[in-house]
Amino acid sequence: MRDKVSVIGAGNVGATLAQRLAELDLVDVALVDVVEGLAEGKALDLLEAGPVLGYDTQVVGSTDYSITERSRVVVITSGLARKPGMSRDDLVSANAEIVRTVTTEVMRHSPQAILIIVTNPLDVMTELALRVSGLPRTRVIGMAGVLDTARFRAFLAAELQVSVRSLEAYVLGGHGDSMVPLRGVTTVAGVPVGQLIPAQRLEEIVQRTRDGGAEIVRHLKTGSAFYAPSASAAQMVGAILLDRRQILPCAVRLEGEYGLEGVVVGVPVKLGKEGVIEVIEVELTAQERSELISSAEAVRETIAVLR
Image 1 (spheres, one colour):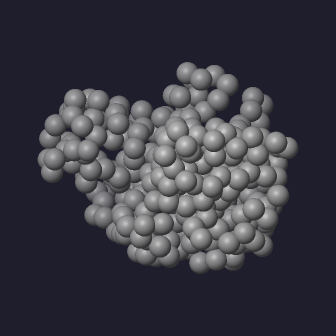
Image 2: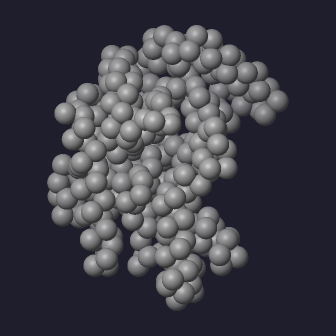
Image 3: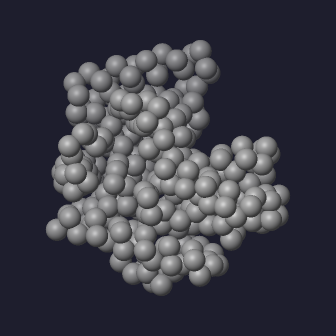
């Protein structure tokens, strides 16, 4: 019997992630959504694509969490998008209720699962899932750093007209305006990016990275990003399923690393079959360290809304 990965939420991010996982042909996929028929219909459509694309993945959908039984990994994408007139605190409160319910149901059916959180505000929802599940921090992981780093690499590659494969970069901190793209360790074929891009232009790219999600929303007008977020979550799932021990920037609760305690922020971690194997501490410049501390404080302030 194959391992199972469950995706909670069959919206754009969840459904696209289910497609990516199905096409990997490594595990079976369960898709859950509160909207009657939504997960069932999308799962059936994905199942019927298998003979065309050549995968044997079994994909099922339901409103019932029983289909998630014994999942190895569960990815939580459920949540509301911020609407006009809704404050950030309103969004935190609304999505907290969703994530609290989802996490409780997931743990009832798959107490051994590793949880990957995609719902926004991501750092806060990761902290909430950690509290509700009672799992160790190694098994409750937020997705944002992979996505933010992908955006940073994409913008740098376009600026330098090189392949994204030639770039090594990390974005740390909270998933939002306070994220911290690391200029000091970002390299292009081993050459520090500061030697290739003037400082002012590099700061413009850093700011575009921070505004990456909002830039897409401005174009779409009635939606938000889902191709890159789903690809980012799929990369994390793959690292866990295949025990790659791959170093990826993910949101985890820190326990003294980077001088921070008891707060969820994005940092490089080694991901494998048990979840987070190790938090990797990279050398930060004085500016980056200051930005990371400020970012962590911003996350703490939002977490306080949960109380």
